[in-house]
Image (cartoon, rainbow, N blue to C red):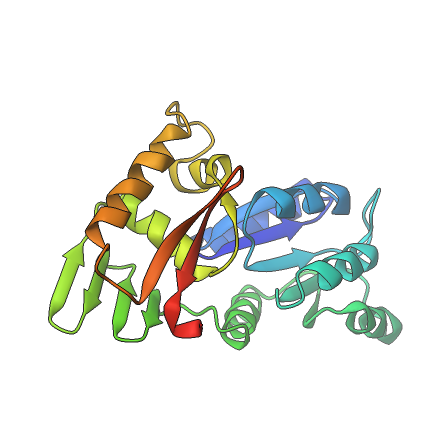
Length: 226
């Protein structure tokens, strides 16, 4: 699922944007300033960030500058009550991808989000293609030519997450939080068990693999990118 981070110091704005994005099927993470946003980025995989300008601790310009240097390909939409040309220019200079003035038009807001995700090649197709292999999020299946493997939901989400960000190392706790939820009472050993099942099911599939990173966690490897 695509995850969007909304950063705004106004609670009503955060909840309003969350409602709009949830209705479109996106997962939403909220932060009330730039400092909290950076903490979120360290803990979760974010696909797109929406950021206000005027915020305490770290404002939108500074946050964008920091994020752009660390997450160069992540789309950033700046949404602010500031409407002067200089404010927009400053946003683009620090690295935003698009700018909207408050109050936002709901339809235009969603269209901009979809356009930014499309440009970043993170679209609503909900499929991953690796050579002849297709991971289909809508059916929880992994297929290769005439071979189709239907997975339990959590196993599929785990594999989909790893292969959506090939080479990125995920800790067991991070995967536990993102796939099972922070309130789940199961231990991180659950991740290890599911990884073992996935490896067994796809041990003869050369197109991808799951690598253990000692002392850290796991990463997915797409062998079509070698």
